[in-house]
Image: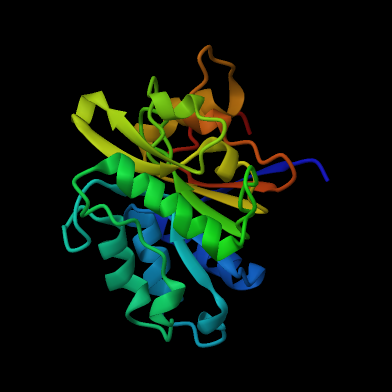
Length: 237
């Protein structure tokens, strides 16, 4: 089936997090790529209180990771670990984190690609099909760790990239566009007035080059944007 796009508008980020938790429970995903960020953290905390989810049947991955050890305050893994993964009965083997304690970001990305290939039992040249990918969007239109003007946006074959982000003077490890666009369900969570202008650009305008978030277009999956009133204030209703 062709991909579909849906935009849902909520009063605030707390309502986004609650709706995203409901969507997670409804989909019953077996493979999930988690996101960092404050709204996902709230979503994970809400999910941790749910007892009707077969946690032992879910394989958890990460859409991107900062180039820091897993106990660093900036680690997406640490955030998910504290808010969800230690609070529900998930076997340790079901959590697939990026080994970004490795000082060589490219090696960490290559190792994570192998981890994904093994978990999905992929043959060469194939991309994993995640049941659910969770994403956020920055005020510059980036998503995962795909920032405007960065090399990973051009990646067509690799599953994972070590992406140099000049404005932060650091590498980020991220899933690539072919992987994200092969998912069955992609759920964006975006809130805050500081994102209103870029959200309008991403959802209603054409840009050359496109914002990274505009490049998320699942070929045969659902794309759902969950945004709050502040972020949506410039959208056509």
